[in-house]
Length: 91
Image 1 (cartoon, rainbow, N blue to C red):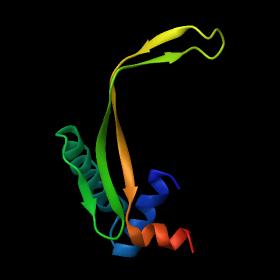
Image 2 (image 1 turned 180 degrees about the vertical axis):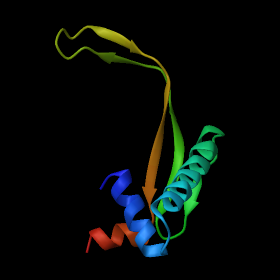
Image 3 (image 1 turned 180 degrees about the horizontal axis):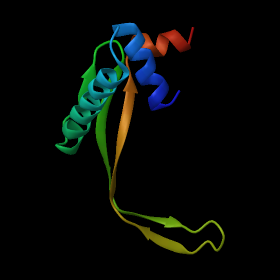
Image 4 (image 1 turned 60 degrees about the vertical axis):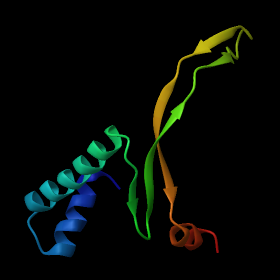
């Protein structure tokens, strides 16, 4: 499912126009992104938690040559599903 399809489903479920549903979707995703940029976790009960994970700089290997390379520190967004969500798929 892509953004357009998701917005259409929201509009139908909420009996709203597609434009209103898209503004609502963009607002929600914008708020989540702002929280993550400020290093805050976003917990959605029954769904899961989004949080920023920091990775330290480390030494890796080039798989073709075996040469050691320096991998710089980075950040990534992690999603940790809630227990109910995990249970739904792991019966």
